[in-house]
Image (cartoon, rainbow, N blue to C red; front, top):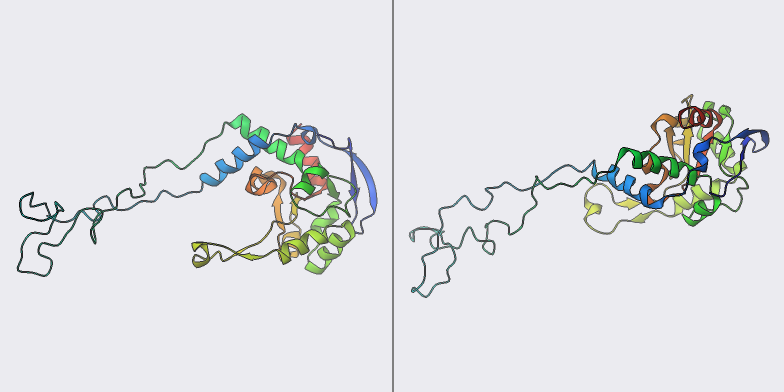
Length: 263
């Protein structure tokens, strides 16, 4: 991938304070196929099996009267001296009958991925955050950002107020992406509106930290911003929806952690 051999570390004012060597993980080849597989595997692992009761619509003694009586061969409730007598039942096209092809809890929803491929997908997703072309292709405004990956000093983890993080984002040129997430909220199409997920919002920057000293509380109110510990990194956070190249902010200690854990 086309990235710099050296990484630039910024302070909270957006000024360059030092230059560090990037870990080898940032040189991983780009594998969008594996990234997408890993994201789908993570998503399907959360699906809870569901299905109808196996006896639903079949708790009846209804049976067909056969041919020769001028009636359709539909299973009918026995008897004639009550309101349900001779009423169609059991069959899929009858009121209260069984379903033709109901959802079944034994269906396998999960899509599996090999451990080696999963690790390679994570490394490739990390490397994609350092490629300006991929970040721009994903839809993030990067015109005001000069160097990737974006690395901040560990002082960033100590911020405790939202207004302080806003100033840092403005200094680094990341604020337009947060505005994109704020103005891009749309009403979801379909039944999801009735199920507690009425709105859809674009994903904004991802902040990768090594230790929370107040930054989670300070940054969590910004639209589209997610904060994650470096040891909890996963492909789904780095490439939401299976689309790699999320705009990511790293703290220096998180980069050092990657250098030790992903040599």
